[in-house]
Image (cartoon, rainbow, N blue to C red):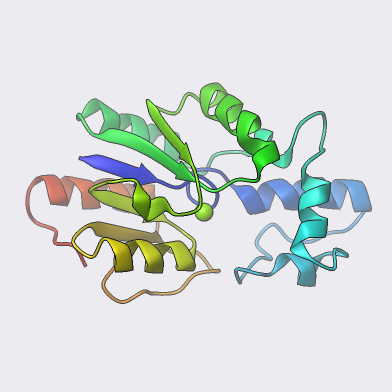
Length: 189
Ligand SMILES: [Mg+2]
């Protein structure tokens, strides 16, 4: 199957990354788990808007924030396991234009098992059998545009259930879900 995999909030720990840089630079102590809504950043920082945040995130330690992110436990290992079972790992990620090269470099450095990367907003345009994303608006839109596909929400404090879609709490559950689809035991939401 073609597995459409989001990066930030799913494979890459975006929040831990920016919070560590922010606390270091501004002497704050924002907890690593402080983000509990999609638009939390201006409320947690001195930035008055997301554009102000992104201007800061573009230049950190010789690259943009996206070059420095850690992976979530189990993410890379699970993707490799699924790739070795014959599934295609299709990366579907939304990024500012200035993060495109850092994104390719990051995917390469982290050795994600993919031959296909799309940096775009409308993820549903890329045809996949299964989609995994943490952004509520992406889960909703993909399901609306491709109601016959399996859309999986990676449950995080900043998202919420979307009718007709599935959810997983961790990478082990995602692997089990794909194995269930392989065996015909899981249906699309
Ligand atoms: Mg995401």
